[in-house]
Length: 106
Image: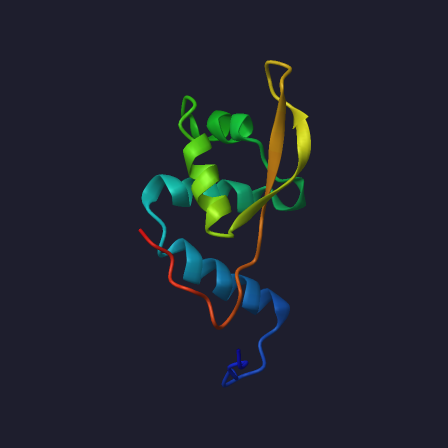
């Protein structure tokens, strides 16, 4: 796979912002909201329980985290306890490849 050249020398922050915008614009609404929340949590990541609490949903984010994981946009990085005391996966957003990012199915 050859590396594409960019017409400018972007900073890491510019690459991160460009990567984020290229991804988020292609995601369906709920998947995008879940992804946005995980991104907003930075290196702390988020569990499905935390996502549900933050977005005001009731258990319908597990499917979205599975989709985002299969798309390579998030990854499980550990576990922590939920509000009910159960162990849950913590998901962290992964910066997508630039500039050769694959199309994300809707």
